[in-house]
Image (cartoon, rainbow, N blue to C red; front, side, top):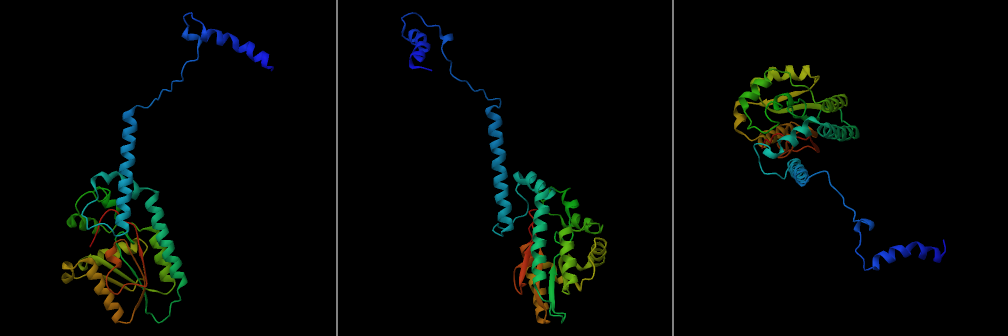
Length: 268
């Protein structure tokens, strides 16, 4: 297109723009107007929901990293978040990852064969899942009620945590001594054994529960003392799996410890 042709096409617009006659604004380009279908309140609500998710994710991270001060219930605003995590793929994938790392470590070890290489397992939320109970108690939103929880334990129907069952079988198959060290009471030994066997856990070497004298002790102290007794008897604690830091920390710690996720409750 020639320059002359361009001028010929633009001339009517120039004439219209610079004429002294009243302009018909409908002949001129109009500004682009974008209409948003969502209202401001919707955007604000979504922003608040995202903020709650971020705060609750941060809180859960703090719990798992053992940075959170002792707590009795989950934050009220995190009730939905914890429920969705526990019942969703996130919790399942985290359990699988912990068990895989533990299994890889177990495979890397050469068991001495003298019966002194030990792997310790906690029970609740480590081997057995109490989610059917906590589903009726806000997934940790309610204050823990030991009486109600014992009623659940006495049913002996807690299902296995499947990745832990796989790890358990791997450890047993490799010749480790398996000690189950739990905060459950000695008076529930029979029902605990029944539940473990029904869930697929067999061939452990010792099941250690709290005696009457142990109930006044913090879990960290109780489990440290029991590990100390193992060490005095010449056992080498090579692995330890638990959902609470009190299962893993303290005296006579294992060579490696594996923390399973649990944002529902805290045991000091």
